Length: 283
Image (tube, rainbow, N blue to C red; front, side, top):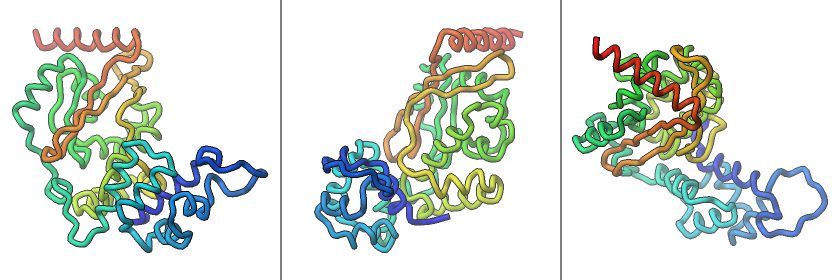
């Protein structure tokens, strides 16, 4: 376990950039993956010693201009730049970053509930920064209720993924799902936030290496869209769900996840679940 998230992120991105991608001449094959520290320093206009201090966690508060230069050399996209900025905010004295320093919001505003109603019959769920499930559509309940995700008070996506053995059956790509859950927790101050720190300590005990190894290795912002494979006990075959993440205003401290069928077979499976659910409601 390490608190040097900024250093890990910078080093990981440096090692992922090739000299050619950074505009440097390609030479003989070399052992060092990606860019050398000296090359990053030269291109960003800082000293090698400073890059070393950043990666080792001895300096966690680079200036905005240095962050911009590093981001440019490393070819960071907008999401990664925002993530980089958030990592530096946690190191500031008297850190306070809006909702991130407060008790996680569990109240759901009326307009958000109305939005969920309009999303029926799609599977959609409202989640706070701890991965707690705050409100959801009937479509989401039909999708994940039978695999046990809605159990617990409060129901928790991250606790389900790491501490419930059923998750490994429900998600054929469990490792990727677990990586995404850790990335979401670490998209900001992480252990500088006492609420996230307590959750991380809990998962360290309950999930062991399944969580701690990812805490030590996963860096970068979470994927906000993609395709999730899932096995539903009431259906044969796998479901392929295209998901999108909608960020609510910062004061809400919440995000909305929407899952849509990614192929015809999944659309037919979800329709079958909806039909069965309506029959049960009519009884």
